[in-house]
Image 1: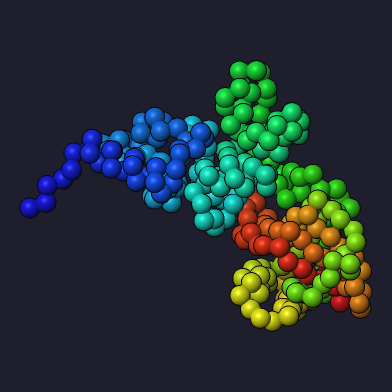
Image 2: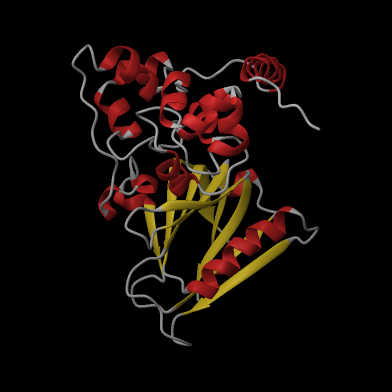
Length: 284
């Protein structure tokens, strides 16, 4: 017969295990809130943050009153870390929002001292900002406020197919030298109108190219072959991008990171986050 361990021993054992495997509990995680909202966790005795990392995040359980797990995952797409640590390490810098009522980028834009200090915006708002009377803006929900476009000038949002054209190609490359891309931009957005099969094809191309020895992979889009959506469906946001003219009327680009945004839903979200690379795009 199996004798269940009392919750007190489970709490001690899982807390020690969490300290060894995960380290400290992030300050955005509220253990008291998590236990109160999830009585099954409280009854079990398991360390709350360990439970969140193992199961809670996958079950869309919220780690605090001001962090919406499902909302965050809808923006971030598939990530390796749990949402709380991802937001602290990467998400805030990428402009992702922790809940529908808090815009990370708007908070930093409104209060430049927060960005200059390198403080996580939500953590500052929770600990000091609210008491200081600082205001949090709602997360973006309209197309002109889409996260991939925030801080990006209209001239740096390149739309394909271009006006008067119905065909273009995107080629992932390994052979674009830095000297071929002299113009630097903090973020460049390629705004693409693709159908479902083409979206899948582009995502799969990025995935395949990362593990391939091929020098190039090309996706060609022809909107005359079959019906296409009436508005853009995907934004390829290139962080720390460099661009320049290439042969045959192509534009060559190098970037530190590429984020593939699905912008069909009311609230856009990231399909993939891809490492540094290069590509060319051409109107055909």
